[in-house]
Amino acid sequence: MTEPEIVILGPFPNGLTVLLEPMQDVRSAAWTILTPAGAVAEPRGKNGAAIALCDWLLRGAGDRDNRALSGEFDRWGVQRHESVTSTHLAFHGAALGDHLAEILPLYADVLRRPHLAEEEFEAVMIGVEQTLLGMEDDPRQKVMVDLARQSYADPWGRSPEGSLKDLPRIDERTVRRLAKEGVRPAGTIFGIAGQLDVPRLSAQIEELFGDWASTTTPQPLPAPGAFQVTKTTIEQPTSQTHIGVAYPSVPYKHADFYAAWAVVDVLSGGMSSRLFTEIREKRGLCYSVSASLHTTPEEGRVFCYAGSAPERAQETLDVLISELRRLPQGIAEEELQRCKARAKSALIMAQESTGSRAGSLARDWFHLGRVTTLEEIRQRIEALTVQDLLKYIERFPAQDLTVLTVGPNALVSAGSE
Image (cartoon, rainbow, N blue to C red; front, side, top):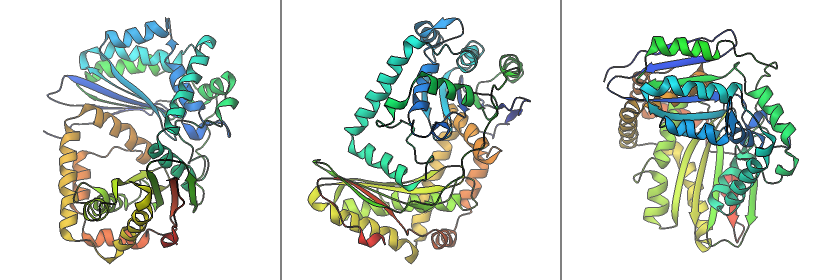
């Protein structure tokens, strides 16, 4: 499959950017729409306004009420989901490419003409509360949410799903203001990939969004703060102990990002990875262990998780930290080659996925101000050497760890000092 040509529309005078990637031999089209009303844009002490807005926007728009709007999406076979990130509300969807001309006006209504009906607001907030209560009953999810909150300075540590303690302070006025300030063309990015009639689509986007005007002056993103080094235990009578460990890494735009990705893959890239092999396979200490790389525009974090029986939790934490400390001692060429093989498989699958490409278009433009092709990514990964990974580890060692545990007993994390 040849590398497709990417068409960039804009930025328009109003600040909107649209990225189109026609793909041969597919009948579907997918889209990711990012608009800058994420968690960092919420007023302080009102974490949850963004996720409430995300739901409220889709409860009626244009000349359709809640049920009619949902029915119209269903009529055109749209497979959609919405989410909130630190920086954006994200609207994801896919359908037959032939239906894009009927679907885009629906999103124009959602973004430009939402009802934000008063009678829908209570149901929105009940939904947010129920989601958060469900997270309270899921210690694994809770530990990772709280770990992010502790390791990033506010507002970057805010949970996109919100905070139970902040919900009583969120009212209609708060969410309407976030809509006015954040759902705007300046900084909004469309990524659309698949079966596209580019000339027709370009003209329609110009017609639907070209005169979309911002009602407020966009504010710059908050500056990052210092990495938060904490050791916290949340004692709960759980049947398992949940362990979270975080330490600083690099953001997506950093020159060492691919080396950082490869190091995390060595730790947690499958059943031959170090954490799985040392903690679960050899010692049988836990039922689940993983590491992942997270990025904001200016910062990165490595987040590690392990779930263990309480009587084995201390040893699990000790071995996890030991494996992080062992990274500077060396990485085998075989480990790096396994990383590259997994990356190659992922790239091939991404090349065939309209949803993956649409998301990558929008993400790349936000973080980099340009689009990286799959071939560029392949070349960057293929060029990695063991020495590159060790240089990254030297510059960004697993030190000053933030450790958070949820379980019946407190754990000692002296090895993280």
